Image (tube, rainbow, N blue to C red; front, side):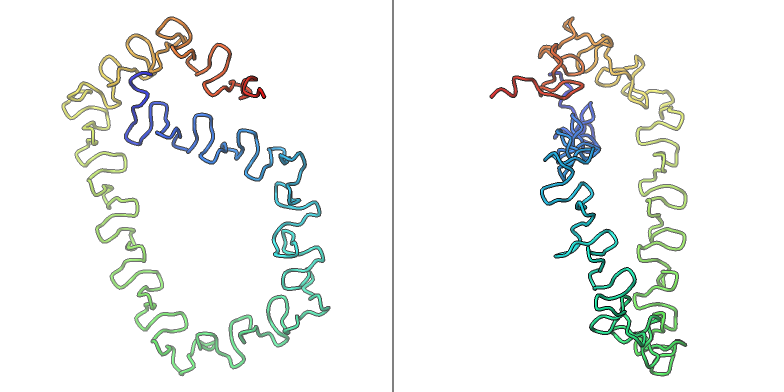
Length: 331
């Protein structure tokens, strides 16, 4: 093991891009599987998804249906899913007899043969006079002409004014134009800020937008969206032309903005391609794949890609088939 295999950057990732648990920034391990054991397509090492189906919709039991009789999409051989508690309903919400949960068919006829159920309401929930169970018509008004807020069709409250007992009109605003939460029709309070705390220009009380920048484009630390301060230098003291504050392209430690010295090596001694001054990478292999020991294999017997001379990696898998060694299955 070399000196850099256990070195992690500020975000917690090693030189290969994996965290201490062996997962990359996207949540996949070295073999391409997430913490639940599935790859980016949702399949495990055996090629099955969480429901036990492969990419060809075949279940691990060898049929197109699982033990409960449903296919990969959740439908039975008759085309019905598990939507109901007792009856099964298709994707439109109808059971095998053609009725929905309320007993109406696609033609809005109830199973009793009429357009109204036993309570006297149709599929849309209204009786023969056009009122629902709560006594309101489709426009929201009762038989005496008032809605749930007790306003008539002209916006007049039952008390004879434009405002209810709490001082709000039918739309929910008081005489000053503010609702019960203190906001006007545009969503701003009396001070001029919305529910999220921003004014009509998009700035909060401290003068910063939701992205954290003021009207001049600087955040609280005085840095713009590109990472430069008002004096033109970033946190590493380089300007937009990669010139350091000292007037050269290298900082006091002798490294440029990308972190390389005049010889093209970083602090760990590697160039941009990842090779040191002797031509070896962090795994001690050169550009030809030859190890520092003069062979194509390291001290553990694995090449630069992690496979031994038999073509297997440390876990016993091959590059192309991911099949394990035959001796792993001896009984």
